Length: 215
Image 1: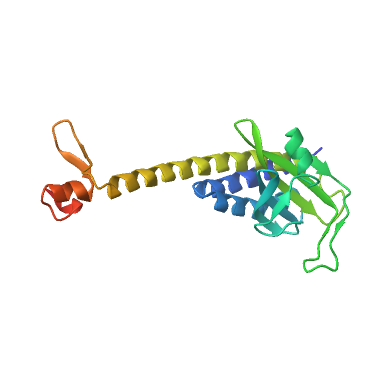
Image 2 (image 1 turned 60 degrees about the horizontal axis):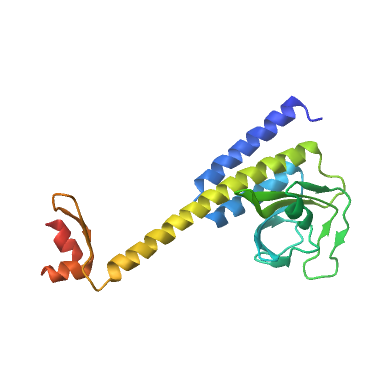
């Protein structure tokens, strides 16, 4: 069992990471990049990855350190280390692995791994993983820490998704508003024009939208 001091120190480090993640919450890629740079340190591993489910594959979103993936790789879910966590929705710990790619262009050796699911609306949409080059590297505190990190990452990615949806909606609105060949405008109840497109301004004899709104 971890001591109360160890637990407090770990929680403090997770909270500090959470502050960094909140600062990048509008960008899913930045969130994943920040998280992976700290996972290994906080769990006692040598590398980390965040991967999102895309059909029958895992789309690797971010990696750091010793991992069995390459950046932007797509890996089949079937037969992967993440498959059990994706199926069960629970954290999976493997203490005695033998992943050895010596002799390849990217030699790695992995002897232990932990995988925690990322959830959205009750559905498993991805995983966070930590890897170690030494067997039995992860203890109960490391597993608890990874669960906290997975929950934090899930929440941050949900916020990033909402930001992206809002930006896409606003972009579609502006495209419809600004490129419409018909005059489009918004007014207050007393007739003061709040916004309009160029077609509306031109129809009233103004040289530009800005010219009309300035009146």
